[in-house]
Amino acid sequence: MLRVTGIKIPVTEKGPDLHAALLRKLGIPARDLLDFSIYRLSLDARSREMIYWVYTLDARVKNEDRLLKRHAGDKTVTRAVYPVYRPVQSGEEMLPHRPVIIGTGPAGLFAGLLLARRGYRPILLERGGDVDTRTKAVARFFEEGILDPGCNVQFGEGGAGTFSDGKLTTLINDHRCRFVLEEFVRWGAPREILYYYRPHIGTDILRLVVKNMRREITRLGGEVYFNTRVTDLIIKNEGLAGLVINNSEKLPAAVAVLACGHSARDTFKLLLERGVRVEPKPFSIGVRIEHPQELINLAQYKRFAGIKGLGPADYKLAYHAPAGRSAYTFCMCPGGSVVAAASEPGGVVTNGMSTYARDGENANSALLVGVTPDDFGSDHPLAGIEFQRRWERLAFRLGGENYHAPVQLVGDFLAGRPSEQLGKVRPTYRPGVALGDLKDCLPDYVVATLREAIAVFDRKVHGFALPEAVLTGVETRSSSPVRIWRDARGEAGVRGLYPAGEGAGYAGGIVSAAVDGLKVAEAIIARYRPLE
Image (cartoon, rainbow, N blue to C red; front, side, top):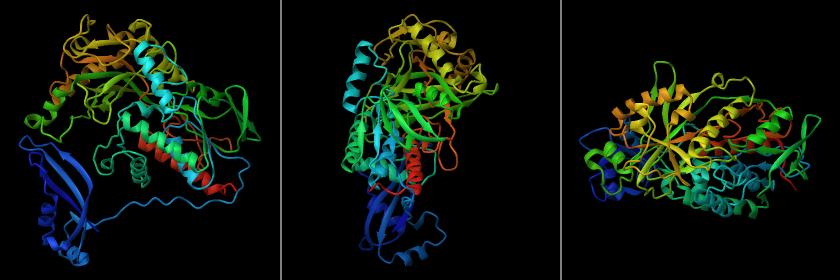
């Protein structure tokens, strides 16, 4: 199989003839091209004159070796190499009990799937509800402002990513990434995520995918329990001996994957009380910014906006202030909505979400500023949590203490005045919004850095500083505020306790969390033999 890169097709070309383009590139007759498929597809919008689809194609051809020699020195024609995921060999130690996985986000689900396939019959514990029950609880919160602290946008089957844009981009370079994407396709995701340069599933498809993965785990002998919160650890002789469930039931366990997610504040507190090393780590806070999607399309695609197939435009922006702070956009949701993502009573938290179609009127993105433990005001391991909580509670108060979110127009934010009425951009946050001044629920240095960043971003994406664009506060859960220490074997200083995923501080998104879950499962497999 040959891999041919850099095949550029203008977006104005209807029904691109990839077959003909590949023949021209390779310089072969049609009879010598046996088959081909798309390996990667990206978009090149750097030129004002034309936007191009850029394809990497994998082709089966006659006389492959001879053709490679003809293209010797041409880096755009090479032998195709596919990453292959080969899990480790099983170890020899005996497991006295079935392994337990705490949490069913990406890390927990992929750890559970791998362990189930290898015969370990894992038990998965999820504090929230199954995805259908969870969807109803989230809808009630959006519609009536009634929060279920155990089942919400943060907690429940699939983790926080279930109610997001379902982005599958990642900065890590790991051979397991391809395996993760292939599994998503196997359980209901569109095949395009295997090759599209910015793959996403959308909250609607992701809900189906996680449900299908859970069914596969149970088919293979695993068990999944919902509304099941781990409230204590039983530790004996520096090793895990069991778990306490819902403050009552005891579950024997010598091995547990701790994939609790970045909002499991009570779990972090429990770990600290039980002597597990928990460290504060940097994260980011800020707001969500909403523009008309049409404005973003025009800014990014110029005169090509509206061409069928381009889809809603997105952006990714960063700014480094002279004073040393950095601001950036994160989790941009084209055609999406800003959602209420609180998991505790008395706090307002925002996030972004979109369906696979991304067909909403507004685009939104987190607009964040980095913070470090030096900003937390304490050297306590959980100081980052209290830092988050402070701003979430201020946002709750500013919004009217009914889970309405405080909002401010960009023009007013830049001018330093409270907003008194909305413009043409209608906020998508539910259950509702309250106009005000976001400086009352953000640190001063965050406000100052965001004002500088918005002006800079407007030069990169024309219209970013649209006076009627809406800022919604606050976004505090961009990543975990703690890292749970783990040693070279993957354990947290307690034999058999394996922290994993974004909540443990070792991942930053759906794919990287899934990869980390696989790594932890591999560590367990390499040590223990399958159950008999």
